Image 1 (tube, rainbow, N blue to C red):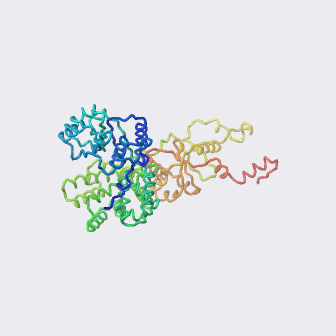
Image 2 (tube, rainbow, N blue to C red):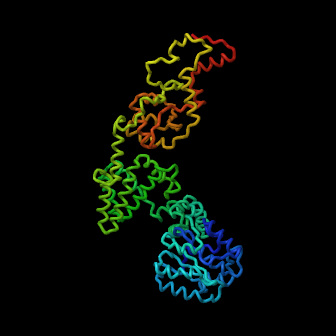
Image 3 (cartoon, helix red, strand yellow):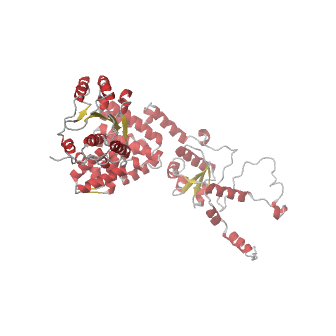
Length: 554
């Protein structure tokens, strides 16, 4: 009879357990030192090795020839545990044996000494399923068991276990396994099975498994049923990832508020035999991916899709506002809950997409926040409060090679610099001009600037306010330095557009919408670019003056 991969390749020693060094090393050290506890609690998500480690521990404490805390796998005890002929290792499913009578029978059996092995080991899987009475019946035996009894409790929901049980066990937490470790293990197993597994396909399987090695092996088994050469296309077909273009179409329909397009896609899916609850779950997952892309610097490790589909998601995430995504997640969750209560699923999902495409039909908080956000975008700058205060000067972008410092609103009192004409001041006492001081301040800002990762999204958002300025700044870069956004562009026409107050206001609104902060605007002029931007004739004159050459200017 064929044996599935996750059973065939179940680890037999602690060294083969993937991604749980905090558990395996501790257990090996305890076994080597002879410090075996009477009760252990293994907790963690599914498929991370809890039952596997419990079986290895049960073999190791009874092995006749242990090796550094690992069972030898060759003695009669190890072979008997492996084939199930030794009755001193008892594995109990608490989901189906959760009553008080079951625990009383266990207590009576625990009083008998082992028949063959050194210890009688009870592995209670899914222990959180025990009833309150069963926990109480187990409590005294768990606290003071016979010397020949060891309890190993395994659960995925440790919060449901009483504190009185937790305090009597050594607790080991199993973490989700890293995708890189899962992928490496999958490629090794595929090689041993005489199949080939692409590196990208292995990483996709690892991300789909969500940290569970058993799930990854089950998916690999399914892929091997299709082809012995497992590629990304085979994984897509086996895992149901192929043909997800409808999710992008539905998202575009929600963004454009095109209810007819959304209902048309739903009708196509219904005619193709698609379960509406499954469609609701897939769309929620798609919106979650867009949310992660918009809110994280690098969301790639958290999204289990191919590289090409991830690039498509990144492009779509730039065009969909975050309030729209959050409204969609709330609406899909509510629709899914109602679907499982027995209502007509197609009607429910159609109603949900009508609310998403027409948010004025929805009275939920998410819909109201979405509508408020849309109003704020269309509101004038003076009303929305996004304009910079008049009293705070802002560096204005100049078309000249050397940027100048912004000029504040003049006051009636004359400053010392303007009290006398420049030509009347002696050359030795001349003060630096405002342009020179501004150039120095811009260079200092550029030296402390950090790249603005959201700049492509800001340019995309800018289309809602001014397509002209958005086109002018397409393909540029921007940096953040303190309260300034410094724009790096060789297109002087783009900077000339920012002279207009309406265009500056549009840029500020787009920046605040994406970053949530109000910044002042300025050019990005580091020292090297500042030197290059100077007039070549003046540079030649300065060099000649230093060399002692007379330069005649006409």
